Image (cartoon, rainbow over the protein chains, first blue to last red):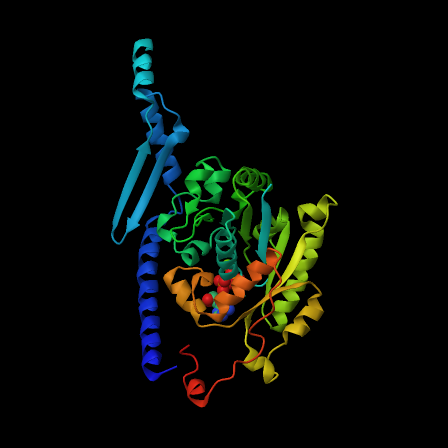
Length: 95
Length: 271
Ligand SMILES: Nc1ncnc2c1ncn2[C@@H]1O[C@H](COP(=O)(O)OP(=O)(O)O)[C@@H](O)[C@H]1O
Ligand SMILES: [Mg+2]
C-alpha cells in the first residue's frame, strides 16, 4: 500500500463515520418522537381505511401507508387502489 | 417449503446481526429469494445494518398482530435483488411475539421465499428461543474467546432440546459453526484460541472463519452488508461461508497471518 492510498483510505473512513452520524440523527429523532412508546401507524391506517370504505368499496388490504423520513422532513403517503371504473359504476347504481 | 436458518450465539456482540445481513445477502445473490428477520424486539439493529432504517413502517409484531400485511412490512433491498428485510418492533413488548404468530409468518413467507434468515437476540430467553424454534439450520456465531465458546455450547444444548425439530422428534436442527472476529496474528502469538481448538470443543462442522476486519465498522456506518464489499477478506470469507452452506467445497482462507512488509506493517490498520 502506498502512502497516498493510506491517506485515501483514512479519508474514506471519516466519510463513513459522518454517514453514520447523519443516519443516527435521523433515526433517533423519529424514535424519540414517539416517547409514549406507541407506534401510531397501524391505528392511523385503520382509521383512515374506516373512512375510505364508507365512500368507496375497496379491499382494505390493498392500501399502503408509508412514512418516509428524510432529515427533518417526514412525508406520509397513503396509496389506495380504487376498483376499476366500471365496477365503480355498478357500485353507484347499486347503492 | 422455505429453509429457515437461525443465526444465534447465546452471547451478545459476537457478530450475529453482521452475519445475518451478509448471509442473507449472500443467499439472495445466489439467486434465491431470501428474507431476513430481526427478532430483537425493543433493540432492533438489523435495519441499520441493512441500511433500510428509514423505510421501516411496519414490523414483525405489526404483522403478527394483523395490523399490517406481510408484504407491507417486507422491505425490499435497494442493492440486492431477491433480498427483503423484516424489522423488529422498537416500541412493543417481547410478549407480543408468539410462537403461533411467528409460525404463521414463516408459513406465509414459505409461499414465496426460499430462505428465511432469523437474526436472534442474545441470551436464551423468549426472543432467542422463538428465533430458533422453527429453524432447519443454525449458524452458531462464535468468537475465539472463552465466554463466547461456552455460550455457544449452551445454545447448542438449547437447539437440541427446545427447537420444534427436537420437540417433535424430527431430524435435528443442522448446526454450523461460524467463527468470527478471528485474528490470525493474535492466534500465532498464542493470545487467541485457534480455530481447531474451538472446533474440537464445540464439535460441530465448521462453516467458515470470518477475520477481524476494519471493513465491518465502515459497512455498519454506511448501512451495507459486509459481503457486498468487493476487496475485503471479511467479505470473501462470508462469500465462501455461503458457498459452503450451498454445498460447494471451498477451502478455508485467512487462517494464517498475512505476511506483511515492514511498510505495510507500519500502516497496518489502514487496509
Ligand atoms: N469480523 C468482524 N470484524 C470486526 N468487527 C466485527 C466483526 N464482526 C462483528 N464486528 C463488530 O462487533 C460488534 C457486534 O456485532 P453484531 O453483529 O451487532 O453482534 P450481535 O448481533 O451478535 O450482537 C459490532 O460493533 C460489529 O461491527
Ligand atoms: Mg444483534
